[in-house]
Image (tube, rainbow, N blue to C red; front, top):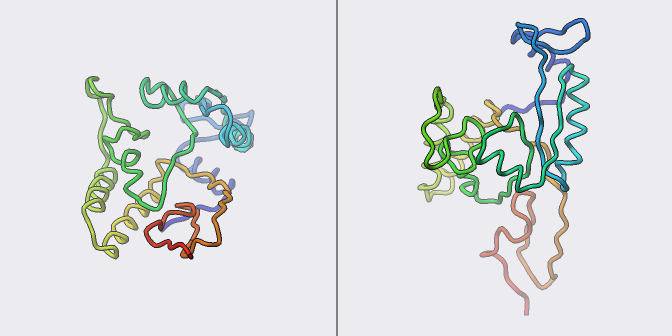
Length: 209
């Protein structure tokens, strides 16, 4: 599975290799000299409002201009899910130890599928929308994973899914927040995990008399 180190020099090399270049003001432009500039949306409060200025500053050092738009959460969701009027968004997604819990995000026709999005119910098809082969493969894996009851085979299916996601990078995961969980010492079998908190294995917990 591919992983990516923080390497601004490598990032610049990839950008120039892809046809971008730097102008006399050291700003990144495309082949038609259009400046690379986009708006990053996030919601008030939470980690997004704190992370957004840092991302803006990091990309500015790369010659990329980022305009920040901080919205109330409901307004952010309206733009992302309904109007589709956005360029880049940052928000937190819930999750857990069960991978099928993110089906709505990764399935190409899912309600929360944010990249190469499908039309909203009742809307006409988007002209030119094409489901890439790797997206179709993700769809097949998600459906197979939901049907499979053998744990080892299921792990293999979702491992393939993760490899595709890490290779194509349609979404960029930033941080997993620190969390503190308090559980009585009468409870046995507790095995906290960043993915599922302290009660993900609820069926395995026992209570001392």
